[in-house]
Length: 282
Image (cartoon, rainbow, N blue to C red; front, side, top):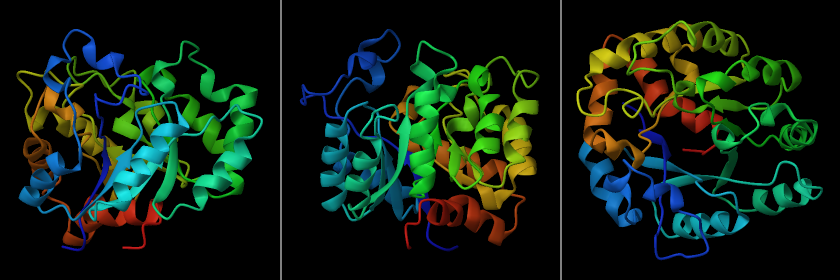
């Protein structure tokens, strides 16, 4: 097995009042309403043999980029940071050029799923921002609900040179075992070779108290068939996953589900794809 990478996790520090953590106080989130910092994750990744990680933003503020990059600079296992820039800002290019200078800044994400406008990602001002990302070859994470997934086809047509990755399979309704409102659009997204998919965030879309790897399997199999392992990457979505499962449980569920893949295919899924997509140089 080559180097293993967790392509999607978060940190937050509830002592930092400049960040908006109100969502952690929502009913049901009590389990994860505390600070999670690098020391907390180290034992988890060591337990399952993960070597490096990608830290992903949770805030729409440039200040979190600076905080996350500082954590990364002082944490050997963090290989990259997916931060945030204001895609609709007039100075979007200046923001990108500033952070491209940072060694561990490897991509951008916007929490599209929480935007009141379901068509946010195809607004003209946002598309201009994505064009700037494409110009500077900065990867972009697509955080969608199922209702947004049809936009991936439009983005694939518009931005053929922009590396994009769908987070959490676009959050299919695993608890309700629904495929009908998701499968066609995930396959359409996969028809664009610059779009990848993270096999992450599934346990929190399943029944938190009664899920099993078999619940995830139909979704994993469709994504693997559509994208191929060379365009899929493992992500723990820790600590959000702790609403439904431990870090080790999430890792074990995916390893069990993809056990029939060849060693080379598993190398891609558990590290190679993320290394290439985010240009981690590992």
